[in-house]
Amino acid sequence: MNDSTHQPAYLLEPAFLRRLEQAALASRRALAGRGKGERRSPRRGTSVEFSDFRAYAPGDDLRYLDWNAFARLRRLFLKLFVEEEDLQVHILVDTSGSMDFGNPHKLQWARQAAAALGYLGLCGGDRVRLYGYADQQFRASRVFRGRGTAVEAFEWLLRLEAGGETRLRAGVDYLARSLTGPGIIFLLSDLLTPDWEPALGRLAVTGGEACVLQLMAPEEFSPGGSGDIEMVDAETGETREVTMGASVVRRYVKERDAFLASVRNGCRRYGFPYLFQETSTPVPDAILRSLRRVGVVQ
Image (cartoon, rainbow, N blue to C red):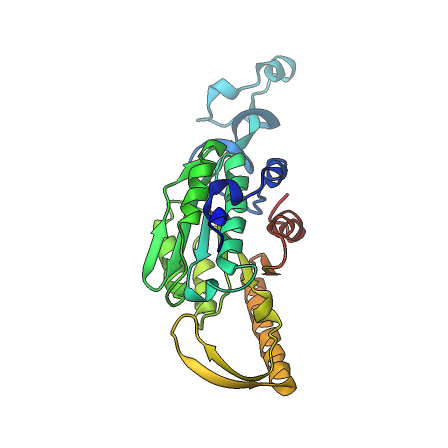
């Protein structure tokens, strides 16, 4: 790749960053954050925005009694407020050898998508942590918070390199052991691994929400070429001679569609928002349009 793609200024365009600042990640559940933040929670709390009343019960904090209501009704009521809290946003990027492929390049697309999702979290006051995995090599960033840390987060993503075999279930296990509370987990991967289904099952018991972004290069989705071709497995180095023809392409398309349907159904079974994208789709469209349609971005 051109060296310019490794510079933070080129990871996300300024115009895209400005659009991200007008959006936000959507959480569908009431999740307990570690502290006060900017995300609205359905739980009742003690922020400045009034929500409701309830009758006083012994042991309630007397600071939140409504004395005006007591003067009118001679009954004790407690003021309730909307609690705002931060969430943990975890973004797991597949860095296996199969991601080192395509035009547009799969890992670069995943880096940009992860940067966009992370920036949404940072702008929302959430705590963001980034992960990369392949083989038994797992990397985790520090916890970022505040949009002022975005450049450091982007630079961390740009240091990710592709190589080795996918170990998706092990990668999810590593992330799960790192969790200190519920949050939102984003998985960015081509899912070209036999253990994708157990990995989704592990995601389902982490105690938070999960969203799966599956990506393929255009050459993977619609392979071209004809005649005798030597194919090389990007992760194992195994080679295989294939004679490309109409019948082989038809079989490939059938297997591809069955695989994508299985992943989509698995995500539906676990209640995960799911998005499939070819890397020819611009990242801004994937994040601000497609993820908005599935209710992940608002």
